[in-house]
Image (tube, rainbow, N blue to C red; front, side):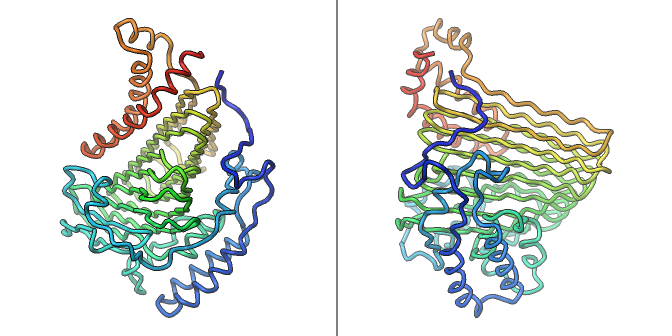
Length: 468
């Protein structure tokens, strides 16, 4: 029977050793930075050079994390550390057309589309149809001293204790720059599409995104990662989000990269008074995917909703670490994460809620639910509450299980095959998260994509059902 476990070491690829050892293989990255810094020093202002040096300094000090680190106890990233390090430092010469990226765009979306090829902005493939109330474009073009980027970049996402965020801070070159103006209501979603095309093993991109919702603004942003190649590569992204007083921002991050790729990501939000941030995080690609989703309340009366859906098959590993920091009173947070794991895949969910001493009247809820569809699939789930205030409402719950036999029997008694019955139930479980998205076009296409993926594994699901 599938079960929840404490820790089992497993082979992710032939690059990983049988017994993990401390991973301090940072020399190629440090050497590469020396050359990178010499080339970039001419182009970048002093404040960028300063944070780059701080980033590489922290990375050199931290090294890659190992399973001996509590925050990485269940996630062995040795394959990432041992991957050849080939950062893509210049725009791709590969000529893509709108037809090439059409499968990754959403039908019926009329809003702005920003396209990044191998981490670099593509003006040709982007479509900026609505600029009123927005400052939108390439981060690389907004690094002038005294601008909005200097006020926020590397101010929110901590990189002194996160090696991957530090590596991104050292090497980032481009990403999305998005400022929603005070009082602006952006009715159409803004789609940020990151496409990997390099066939070089170890090709590495470090996208850096900055999203600022100014006072009383409203917007929906879709951050999307896809691939046109199957070679092992590495995406290491940091997205900093600042939600000003009274602003409302809905942010949907989709990780749909090649199952031979590696993906690490930090999404850090900061929320001022009476703001609202809704996060949707969908992950079903990459051999190893690690997502840090975090928010900090810096003003009273704010609200955060964190929704997540992760799907694993074969030997995929998907790891979610969430942190909600209630640093101010009268704030609420609600987390809903669903995991669907098949084959020999491994899921990790670690959710932390901090309630500071003066954060009275906090209302925080966290729910993690997981379906194991095979005997070999595993999940490690660890809810954490650290409460230093006394007038609060905080709850958490985690479930791990299989499909309900009674529900399967009910469907089969009405002439539905075992294969389809199991697929319907798994799809309904995933839809509980997808239905929380406000944009119908995105919700519908994601729902269809998830359904198609589940259909690919329907034979395996039916076989598993026959064993149980």
